[in-house]
Image 1 (cartoon, rainbow, N blue to C red):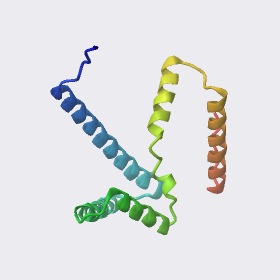
Image 2 (image 1 turned 180 degrees about the vertical axis):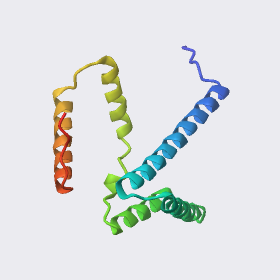
Image 3 (image 1 turned 90 degrees about the horizontal axis):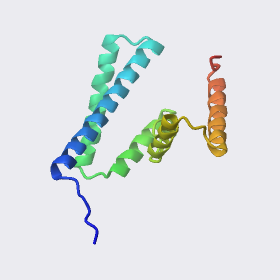
Image 4 (image 1 turned 135 degrees about the vertical axis):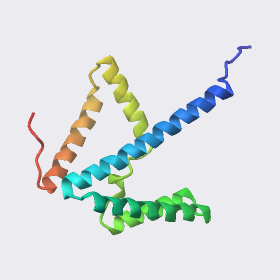
Length: 146
């Protein structure tokens, strides 16, 4: 019989704490990027940005109350998707999906090993680049030349 090492409760607690801290930091960074984009692209000043933050917190609280009222995460997610669609935003532009973690990990391994992508991966990258070019063309913009 093989003995199997289990991580200690203390180590598991530390990992949970680290993952939580990294997640919160990523969310905060995303919020900061969003505020900077509003400032740079649309000229939102500090007062307007503060109003936007206030409204963001109100919306967040509304959805928190929904959760405490018994709505499931799936129901809340669907409500958010419906709200995005009602203002003309495709939810797929906001929510990237659950399998992207593994794609990022695979890309990270390739970068660390300095390996070239397979033909299939290169094909997928080419298709994505074509979609991105079409998107930019629809927006009236061009890709910068290197």
